[in-house]
Image 1 (cartoon, rainbow, N blue to C red):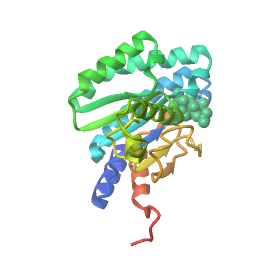
Image 2: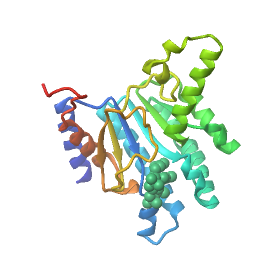
Image 3: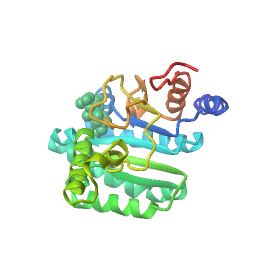
Amino acid sequence: MTVSVSAGLLDQIKQHGAIPRHVAIIMDGNGRWARGRMLPRPLGHRSGMKAVREVVEGAIEAGVEVLSLFAFSQENWQRPAGEVSALMSLLEEYIQKEADELEEQGVRVCMLGELDRLTPPAFAAVDRVMKQTAHNTKLRLNLFISYGARAEITRAARLLAEDVAAGRITPAQVDDAALEAKLFTAGCPDPDVLIRTSGEQRISNFLLWQVAYTELVISDVLWPDFGRRELYQAIAEYQNRDRRFGRVSS
Ligand code: IPE
Ligand code: IPE
Ligand code: MG
């Protein structure tokens, strides 16, 4: 049943034709999913791994080029130590379990954020999967870890200031393109659609620069329950939007 529903939806969004090149997702609601089952929060995060697998496969099937997943924010470092360490272990486990499969599927894994804050084993795992999959071209999977958009923009400004101070560029050469080239997402198209799960209606410091004209889709589904069907529903909703970019409708 679920398979045929999602297969029907996949046909529908493919027939429409406007497949988003870049889908970004704020994966939220793991804690509430666990609480609803009287389970500890880390088990909610663990269940969320299955949803990651589903959306990666769904994105490949739909023909999405870039999938950006917000996995751990800079603000999330302030959560209880036990939860933070559970999340770091899950990151390592995810990479260990999925690396070969991702490699076979043609997925290039990129980790974006302040990665020097990761524990050495987590950093080593991240580094390994990035190198292992660097040549893949089917889907670019951006995993945002220890990421905050304001810090990303501030870092870009600092890098530009260093370039100016060193005489590599003039102040007049600091434009949108120059700043964009210093972001972690340099070279990626902006997200066409940003999905947030669990019904929350905020950006929570994700991709502030890049979402200037992104379509927002809020799903009430908690992240561990999100799958292909919900991804395709969100893409169908995106396809019904009239993107005007400040102009008038054609
Ligand atoms: C999202 O789920 C995962 C991370 C932020 C790491 P939450 O842990 O935020 O789940 P809720 O929002 O408490 O339900
Ligand atoms: C955003 O979710 C961060 C990630 C999904 C990684 P949070 O649960 O941390 O955000 P707030 O606290 O609800 O804004
Ligand atoms: Mg949350």
